[in-house]
Structure formats: C-alpha cells, structure tokens
Image 1 (cartoon, rainbow, N blue to C red):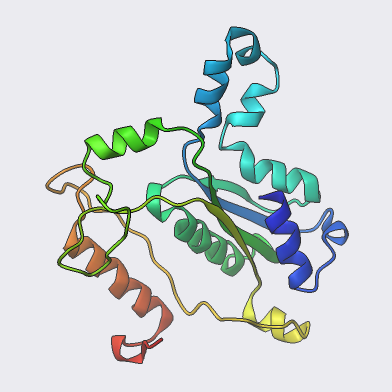
Image 2 (image 1 turned 120 degrees about the horizontal axis):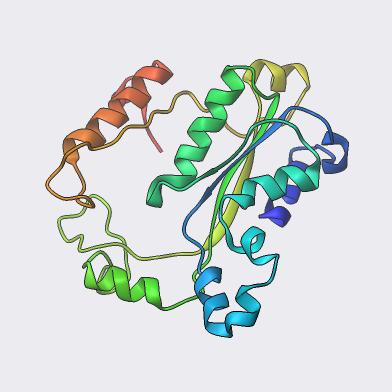
Length: 213
C-alpha cells in the first residue's frame, strides 16, 4: 500500500515528501487481515509482541500511510467486503467536495495468505466452482477471489485544471446504500443494486444511455 501510494503520487507529478503537513486525505478499502491467524499459528510468544496490534489491525492501514507522508487530512480505513475500494473512493470524493482535504489518496488492498477464508467461503457456496466471475451471466455461480493493490490520486476538477495536472478521468458521481432486510444476510438484492446505480447516475447528472465503454 505504501509503495502503490508513493508511485501514484509520483505518477501524478507530486513529490510525496513535499506533502507533509498538508490536507491530504487517505481512504483505504481493506478487508480482514490473514496476518492475525498467521501470527496465532507461530506461537504465543510472537502473538504477544507489542507491534502485533499495529501490524495486523486493518484500521492502521490508512493511518500508517498518513503517518509516513506526514499528511493531516482525513484518514479512513473501510471494510465493506467486496465494495470496500469503491466505498473508499466515494468517501474520498465526498471529503474533497466538503473541503476536508485538498488532495485524496483512494484505493484498496487485499492479500490472500491463508487457506481458511477459502474454506469458509466454499462452505457458504460463495466461490465459483471454476474460480471465475461471470458478472451479469445466467451461468454465474459465485465469485473468484483475487489479491492486489491499487491507489488513485484525486483532486477537485477545478483545482486540477488550475494546477495544470494531467487528468486521466473525471468522477461524475457516486453513491452508496445497503440492501436492508433481504432474503439473507449475504444474498444480493437486485432492487437495492438498481437503486444505488440510479443514484450514482443522478448524482453525476447523466442518463443510463450516456454510459458506454
């Protein structure tokens, strides 16, 4: 996460060391950490090390990033399961619009270090038998897990234009919601997913027909 964030800042033309003391927000989507279970397997001695709490707790991910860069904007770690990174992006946009920060780092990180989650998810029948995601397909039978890290640098459009930044994309709108009471705690809810997509379109001031690839 630190390396990806540093690289993202350099790619955006910003010197990471020059941001110290500035209102830069960090918003990180991050799920449960496998490091805790690995530490437990090593033995009681290692588990009592004073750095275990800061090393394996996912809430420290954004905090460590803010600490290393020396920035003073909001620092938020988000765990909303599969939507974590997108929710982190949404919160970063909201924070920029509210003036809480001048620049925001938004991204996500996930590592697969232990077999246990595969077992849990398989018993829940959440994983696809062939490990492939088949989004929008009638043949969808679960999802395939993946790992990686990605970070983007965000600014208000007017600020990016004023500073002559290289603008790769503009986020027109975003939205979040929850299924509420559905058929099951983990079951997708089509109506809720439709609602959040429509709200994202509304917030961006565009119609479904305006979307293409």
